[in-house]
Image (cartoon, rainbow, N blue to C red; front, top):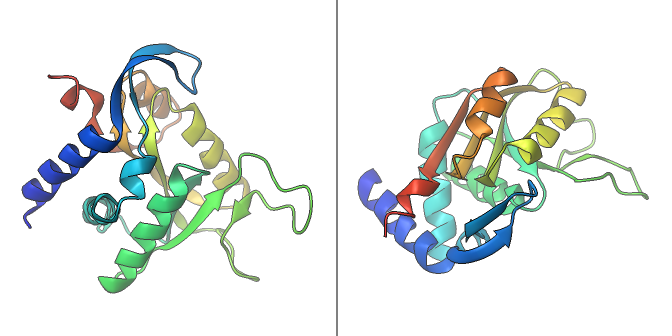
Amino acid sequence: MSKSASRARLAEIIRKRSFGRGEITLASGRKSDFYFNLKPTMLDPEGCALLAELTFEALKDDGLDYVGGLEMGAVPLAGAIAQLSWLKGHPIAAFFVRKKPKEHGARLAVEGLAKGESLQGKRVVIVEDVTTTGGSALKAVEAVRDAGGKVVLVFTMVDRDEGATETFAQAGLPFRSLYKAGEFLKD
């Protein structure tokens, strides 16, 4: 399937499984009359495959060592991208950032790294399912930087176009998305 056909098909899946209208309070605390819950798309076999394919294609030339982000939204994305990157012969390892470190065991904020493995000096992309203001992704950025990683990009599946571009510009971080919310609001 061509990139444009894959993108169109994924938009159909998102519209059917993950987009809705109705008043909702977003993670940012803002009210909205539309929402995206990408988990049904991320956990659908075809949706997962298309998200991984289109994201990998968008990221493959960025010289990345790791892909990850804040739990829960980034977990299925990072895993799918890591798997596809291996199959494509261009491995990008995955991790995720806990919203708060576990209170037992190793008490890690960054999960998924093997013993002796580190983000120190590594090129990292933070992925997110849906981005509104960018606050959640910045938590992951901070954790990666605390672990010594270099965040080179924040990449989201859907940018709600409600301030994230400005947030990341102020933080000096490049920001890209697969889709803009407006693409789903046309109908």
